[in-house]
Length: 161
Image 1 (cartoon, rainbow, N blue to C red):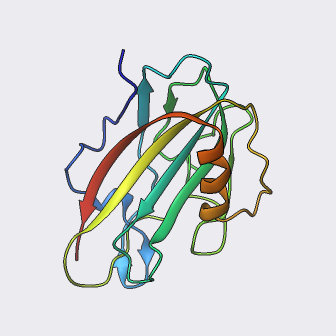
Image 2 (cartoon, one colour):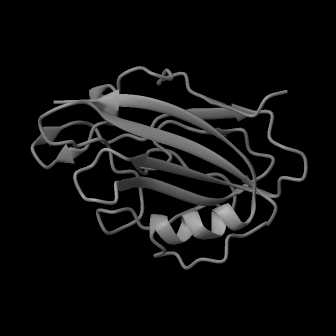
């Protein structure tokens, strides 16, 4: 079975709804993290990391919108709202710092102009716990994730003003 990330709220290549848009920076969204499911996790997976990244943000380095580490390997779903406090994260999962400065889901909030891509990526890791502090940046999480990665699956959606 192929390692695959999917959602009953998002469709690969589709557009984010206002439910998943940030409420701030001139946007009026619900800032609710989407439901995400996966299957086909690589053999030997001991934990998972989920990231949401905007490579089109006008920062010079993109923008980390959501980072969840230490998802137990036997988990196959994050419920709608799990990153925004409306549902629980599974097991020992924890959210690290986004580029807004704290943990938790930060919905889309691009400036006016062309659509931005929001890339949700689930990384399968060979270790139980990512050795990063709770306030680790997306870049630091990415470093340790890459060092321990067995595979990844992605889902990309777009949003523009």
